[in-house]
Structures are given as structure tokens and as C-alpha cells.
Image (cartoon, rainbow, N blue to C red; front, top):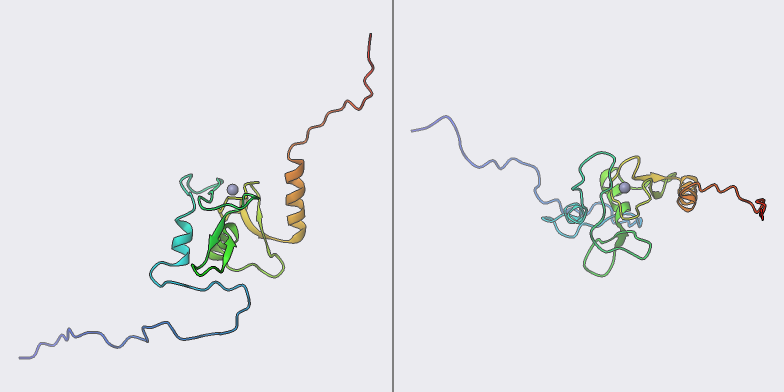
Length: 154
Ligand SMILES: [Zn+2]
């Protein structure tokens, strides 16, 4: 007897190993993939505290920080490939840094923040970077108008 419906294995798909060497050129900015089943993105985001939810909030990095307060993430376990976590967040979400805006900037003054958001983490230009620093140093406009002009009244 023959049934019309063939329930055989579907062997018509494309090549199932994605291990074809594509471009051997290392341009310095590429992120190597170490393990197929636990991606860099998965490992990375597991260190980001997103409990504050979406919106205009910080997502702090919960892993290692450097002395400036920036998060660090190790791409592989072979001793190489340590990146700043907010830069990797940008790379994962919006792609590598554009040539004209290569700076991973924080609009929220929180270096550990990894929330890719226009008010938190974004790619920016050098002039934006300088502005960022400038704002950080001024922080609050404390305008004290006593210039020594005050007279001592006896
Ligand atoms: Zn933030």
C-alpha cells in the first residue's frame, strides 16, 4: 500500500554547517564567535541589569568595572578581546561604530550603563565626546556671585 503523503526526512535544506570561512581579513573591529550555543550576546546581556525596564533608565553593567567605572567584557577566554561593555552593547544593538562617530558615549553620566538609547549610550563624534566630558566636569551650574566684592560690614 502506498500512502500519498511522504513523511520522510526533509533533506532538501541548505548547507547546515555555517563554518565556511568567509573573510579571513581581520580589520580589528570584528568580534569573533567562540561558542555556537552560547553566543556573545547571550553572555553579554546576562551581565546587564535591565530590571529597570525600557524607557529612559540606566541598565548598569554588573560585571567587572575598570577604574573609570566602565564595564569590561571578555570576548573569549583565551586572554584576548576585552572590550568596554557599553561599546559592545552598541555593536550588538546598532552595529559597529560608524567611521564618523566612533565614540561610545554616555548621555546619562553613568559609565557602567549599557542601555543603547539616545539619552544613555550611543555612537557619537569627537566633538560630542568633548561636550560630554565638558558637561560632566561642570555638572551643575553653581553660580556663586560673591567675587570678593562683598564688603565686610563691621
Ligand atoms: Zn544610562
